[in-house]
Structures are given as C-alpha cells and as structure tokens.
Amino acid sequence: MEKELNAYKKYLERTGFAPAPVTTALIDMDGVLYNSMPNHSEAWKRLSKDMGWEYKENEFFLNEGMTGAAIIRQIVLRNTGVEHVSDEEAKRLYDIKAKYFNELPKVEPMKDTDKVLDVLRRNNVTRVLVTGSGQNSLLQRLDNDYPGMFLPNLRVTAYDVKKGKPDPEPYLMGLEKAGAEAASTIVIENAPLGAQAGHAANCFTVAVTTGPVPEEALYDHGADIVYPTMAAFAEALPTLIALRNEYK
Image 1 (cartoon, rainbow, N blue to C red):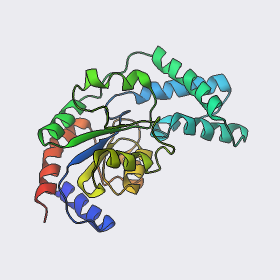
Image 2: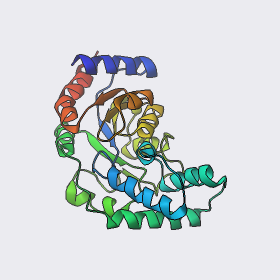
Image 3: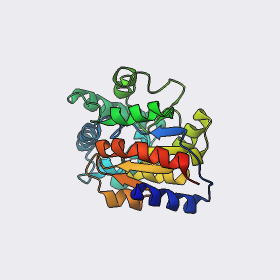
C-alpha cells in the first residue's frame, strides 16, 4: 500500500484536490484492452515503406494515443517538409494502414485486463473507453470480448475528438460523458502520450508497461503510478480503490 499511498499524496499535492473515492475509470484501448500495438506498429511500418518514409524502430509505440491523421501529418512533415495534409488524403492513407492491420494475425485481448475490469465492476466504478484509435475492427469487438463493460454512450474514439492525445481533450470528453470530476477518476494507460493526456486532464493516471516503452518514460510523461503488468495492477487495484475510499 505504501506505493499507492505515496502516489496519491503526490497527486493531491499536484492538483490541490480534496481526497475523493474512485467513481470512474477512463480506459485506453490499444495496449490496455488489446495486445494490438505490435500489429499497429507493423501496419504503420508497411505504410511508411510504401510511401518512402523513414521511421525509428519503436516510433509508433511512442506515438500511440495520437489520432491516425495526426501521426500521418507528423511523419509527412518530418520526411517531406509538407506542412498540410488534407483530411481526405489523411483518411486515404489511414485506410491503407487499417487494411494492413486487418491483414495481420488476429489481435488478442490483453492478458489479465479482464481481471482489472472485474475489480472495477465489483466496486461499481463506471468504465469509459478513451482511445485515439479509429480501428473499427477492434472497436466492433469490444462487446464480445468485454461483455457489458463499456456502454455505447461511454466511449470516446478518434471519431469524436479534434485533438488526440497528448492533448487532454479525449479524457476531458470522457469525464463529460460520465458526468464525473477529475478528482474521482483514474486513467488507465500504457503509452507516454496517453499518460501525458491523463496528467493534463488532472486525473490520477495509472500506466502499465505492456510494451517496449520503459517505466521511466511513463513517469516522465506524467503517470502517477506505474505497474509492470496487468496482473500486478489487478492485484493492487483493490488496495488503490480502498485507499481512495478511506483517505482523509
């Protein structure tokens, strides 16, 4: 409990909020609900090779959370100096990337995330999906893979926001949809830009290292606490919720 207590004290000092129980969890999709980031990375690499774009090996893991259009505009600017990519061209390129994604082996749900969601449900914590993804092949699987966990009106995707992560807009929209205050929420992330967005929205931000991004990068981008696996987070989550409920 010491790790959770110290993290929560620092969070209260940072935000100036009064202690509040957890009522709502804002939950990322790629790398949290699904072990999808390796496939996303490979699909982006294939598109980049088609277009003659240079990229770094783990670049797309670090870009996770941005909308597809934002990733395209970033990499086009860096590779060509072109500052404007139309919405139509961004969609065309993203559709190619999505095609490559769908050609890859089926993505599986993230191991032990179901345990995390079960803890949240047992504690009556509202679950809100907050993803920068527009990958319909995953979004359409949510009800089958995680039945009853995400109501249709409690989802924020790339189609809903103007600014993707690291901007706080997706998480602020999640708060609005849930009718919740930042002080009573937790964000569940795995990516630096997602942690940065949760931090900027003044939510207590939990990050889990489900990919090649190191723990230090998650803390550097604003995560309040980091766990090494979903299993470790699922084990600690009841303690975190109880601490929040009882903290004076």
